Amino acid sequence: MSLMEVKANEPVTFVIFGATGDLTRRKLLPALYTLFRERALPEQFTIIGFARREYDNEEFCELMGAALREHSRLPADDASLKEFCSHLLYHRGDLSDPAAFQSLNDRFTNDSTLPANRLLYLSISSDMVDQTVHFAHNAGLITPANQTPWTRVIIEKPFGRDLETAKALNQNLLAYLAESQIYRIDHYLGKETVQNILSFRFANTIFEPVFNRTYVDHIQITAAETVGMESGRGAFYDRTGALRDMVANHLFQLLCLVTMEPPDGLNAAAIRAEKMKILHALQPAASMQNRPGGVFGQYAKGDDINAFREEDRVSPDSQTETFVALRMEINNWRWAGVPIYLRTGKRMSKKTTEIAVQFRIPAMQLFQHVACEGDVCDLTGVKPNTLIFRIQPDEGIFLQVSAKRPSMQLVVESVDMDFSYSGKWDKELPEAYERLLLDALRGDPTLFTRSDEVESEWQVIDAIWKATEGQKPVDYAPGSWGPTDADQLIAPFSWRNEQ
Image (tube, rainbow, N blue to C red; front, side):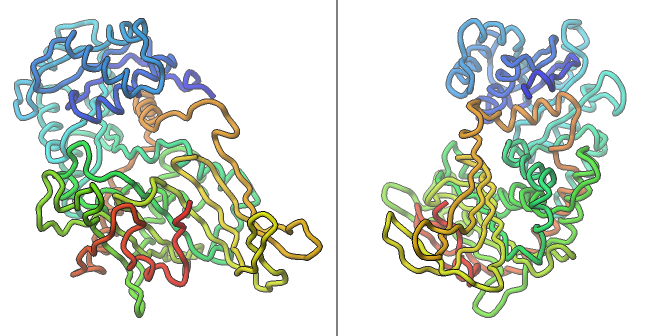
């Protein structure tokens, strides 16, 4: 299916608040440009960049053109850029100035060429969201729900810092917007391989019957990054940490998709309802003897790499975690007793995001298992079947099984059954923001997070903080797989460190 088959048809003005920021240059404009090149945008559309800097339309177009040449996945040739830039406008304004919002609304009133439907993207600091929505509403930029022209607002994470602040943010937003107008974006949900989790589970009868406590031994979810505090992220990350930045949204969403019950449809309400059931049943596992329920780490100094405390705009005595590993459990009939291990960190050995579902070892071990290099084989322990959803990079789904090795002996060896996107299709996968922006333009909230979902996630995070109260992050070497304490957390299993 091409993007054209899910084209947004209604004319729209796309307003980006914070239009000169890093997210706009690296993700938003390249995504919109790709949708434009794929003819997935409506015939009538305008993109207005709202920011404080002194630009005119031509200067803003030049700035965005340079960003598209650097970051777009489609060739940014002069002819296409010129045509795309004809849809770009710039509006200078300060987010703290109500008059700037009024002047933007006046622009809509006085310019009949601007489509009246509005998609407002808040590419701004989270502490500015409340005020921005308040000013936009008072200026008349937000139309009532379920009316035409429509208004939708996209909000970037984090959606609060804990349950209390998340509830306050939702309450403030819902004072000016209906829930149907709010699109809380989690770019992980826009990734092709994440969406394929549901397809794989519920479109194949051979797998769904074994996704339960009878057959699954444990589940590992890893999101490892090799980067540190590039792009000036030190101040944000020092306030946030790995638990809030990654676990409270990305990893919980992956967990929900791989463990939820079959929805009664593929609409937003049905999928969200099943995810909510998982979040209500999710809890941190109780600490066991010599096995903590959670491990926090912070990367130390390495060769030509600053320690986290030495990074720009990070406190020199910071106790913020850049790594977290957790043992969780789902208290429901399908998953009771199955440990779920979550792990994420900065400055790790390898960039990878994957879900590994490890199945139980057969009750009777009839065969000898070997590990071989060429014709040289050694006896080894039983290798359990493992189903791997590789989110990034090398996207695909891989199943590790045992098969007889060609020889005169009856021995089995671990082999892989692979499905890789690159091996099956020669086309490049859509970027997550392309899918999510197109869905927002079409009014499809399926891959966006609802207010009660956000609050349920923070309720679990608050429980994790309580269960690990007093724990300080331990140092780990950059380029490693995190603190060695994380190995104790997952024992007697082992992390999949050589994905």
